[in-house]
Each structure stands twice: as C-alpha cells, then as structure tokens.
Length: 377
Image 1 (spheres, rainbow, N blue to C red):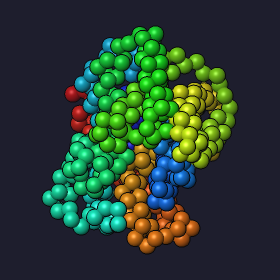
Image 2: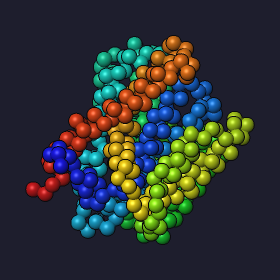
Image 3: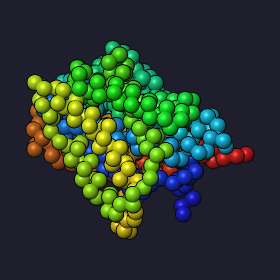
C-alpha cells in the first residue's frame, strides 16, 4: 500500500463502501459530464439531448444517505457530532477547493456572447474563488458570471452545498429519528418533491443552483427526500444477493439519465411525473440492487474501483471546462458534430484530470488532514 493512500475506513467513518455502488456513482458522474456538454446546444430543458442528466444529483444524494447511515448509524456512542463533521469536511472539502481554483484559473478564457468575463476585475475574481473554496454561495445579481449561480466558477458546487446541509441535519437531527419517524419524513419530503416536479413551474427538478426562493426550495427538497430515503434504506436493507448487478444497473442509469424529455412544453407534468418516479422508485431500487451484489469478477471489481475513485473528483473538476467548451461553441457557432472532438476532449480530459487530482492532491491532502485532525492524540 502506498504511503499516501488513505484507507476507506478513515474516509467513511470506519466501514468500507459497497464496491458496486462506487462503480454506479462513477457511471452517473460520467453521465453528468455528458449532460453538461449538451447544454451548449439546448435552448431549454425541453430540447436538450442527454436530457435527464440532472437526476444524477438525486442519485448521489440517495447514495450519500445510504453510505453515511451504513457507516455511522451504529457508531454514535463513540462518535461526536464534531468528529463526524470533521470527517465529512476532510472527505469532501479538498476537492471543493480544487474545483474553485481550477474555475478561477480558467475564468478569463471563457469569454462568450452569454457572459462578459472581461469586465470582472482580478479582485472580484479572487473574491469569487474564495467564496467558492469556502462553499459560501453568491447572492443572485452580485456573482461574477451574471447567471444567478451560487457558485459561478464551478456550478455543480451547489449540490455540495446541499450535501453539507444534509450532513449537518443528519448529525443534529435526522439520525435521532426512529425508523418509523424517518419513514414519515421520507414520505413528507417525497410528497413535497413530487408536488414541485409535477405541478411546479419547470416540469422537472432541474433546480437548486441559485439562492432564489424557488431554486433553494427545489434544492432542499431534492436533498431532504433523497438523503433521508438513502438513510432509511440503510436501516431497513436486507440484501438479496444478486449476481452481475453492476452492468445492468449501469445500463439502467445511462438510459434513465439520457432519455429524451417527456411531454414537451405542452405537458410539463408528464416529465415531472417521470422525475418523480426516478427519484422515488428507480433510484432507491438501483441502490438496493447495487448493494445486494453477491460477487463480482476481478475485471468488474477493478472497473468499479476506478469509477468509484474518480467519481467525486470528476464531478468537482469538470465544469470549468464545460464553461470553456460552451464559450468555444457559442463564439464559433458550432454544431455538435463540428464540436465533437472538443466534446470528446472534455470528457476524456476531465476523467484524466480527475485521476491526477485524486492521486497527486486529494488522497495526500486527505491523509494529511486525517493525520492532523482525526486521529487520537
């Protein structure tokens, strides 16, 4: 074992991850990159190809609740809230900082007709980078890109902001609920999420990236239901010992996230219903099936490990390059076919960069922070 390697137990509170779930998280992360690439060619959520990639966030939240419940629910007699929060910061925050720094470095190369970065001063950019690195959301109307994002240098950081909220709620409140009370919370949150999806203004739950009332409400509902549902699943989980679940669960994830918009602009509720079914039924089922994997061959194990290792770094570092790709497409008025080499470069390059960040930055930094702040003196 390399000296710079951090054990899974250290990073997850003392218990290992499910290998297949790690792999599925990586598959979903790659689909997020593809979803964001196609944003450059969409006029709205209605006509975007790889249409439902935003639902990967809800899958991540369910996975997070399941894994945290598995790792911590029976350890609170020996674990304090302070220790739990420190462990989560050590696990999550190094890559939050890296994503912010990459976003800041690439900012002035992302000039396009949609946003004018040339008017942003160096001090304003520095301030935005610092806020992103500290995971402090920007107020709409005052952020540097002008799109109303909480984190205009690295858009997906909004979901990590809610991930922190979920972790804090778990430590202070949700973990103390009985299983029956937790089930009631899941039911109420699920009804709220379904209501937003089906009768809300968007006809989907592709929301949460801004501090506006409706966006924040959507983001909170997505977090509250999915995280709590994952936690409930971890408490009630009884494995079914299923063989080969990684490959066909991966196929289901790719299909669910890539399927075209349902109902069009005329019937928004139909797509909202689809989002609801994915979040309330399909994703919990996929987590159950993935956690029930009986055995995997050596090749599948290696694939799952690689995908699991790069999943979080990939999610946190790819989006600054999406801004760059978006500007390139818009400035040159390219079709997707014309931009295909650039799109492929973004996907492959982001995976390579994620792996480099993992090995040369994330693992060593987490090891240092674990040694410094988590181990008993």
